[in-house]
Image: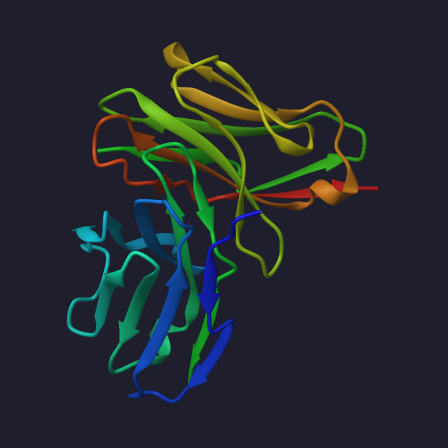
Length: 112
Length: 114
């Protein structure tokens, strides 16, 4: 089965450090999402892309978060500087149109 | 704007009993609707989807859901619960022909009582 690959699986970092999370979407999928999941807020949409163009990043704290798709096989989410409140599981998902999206296994980020 | 409401953050059923997880949606245009399941420490897995074809949708693991436009509902059911069904379930909506952004409900944690 085709899958969305996220790296790293787990990341522990100190406050103030830069964090980069990577996602390899399924080949041929034209839409990529980044979600953040926490106990308190549930699943929050951070940003999403269609055909590599950013469509909506209103869910992201602009001063510290950035999302890019340098090519069709890679999406990145960066946090600089990281803060303890950024601790969460970050999911990438890819799909085509509105026909359902495949999620990766997530990156569990802990900022201490 | 689109939104999803899941009634009941926790649902407990006995093994072998009917599972019913409720989802109501709000959308200004015809929606696509989805149910996802999340097992502990895993990502979300698509259970089933409604994309304007048949209103009764069958998914994996014996689950099904019925789209009822008049009630703006998309409830998830399974006739007989199994211990392996214990997980968190998320309903989600996106708008046909719109930006197709996927908006999730707050989730329902399903517990199966032996």
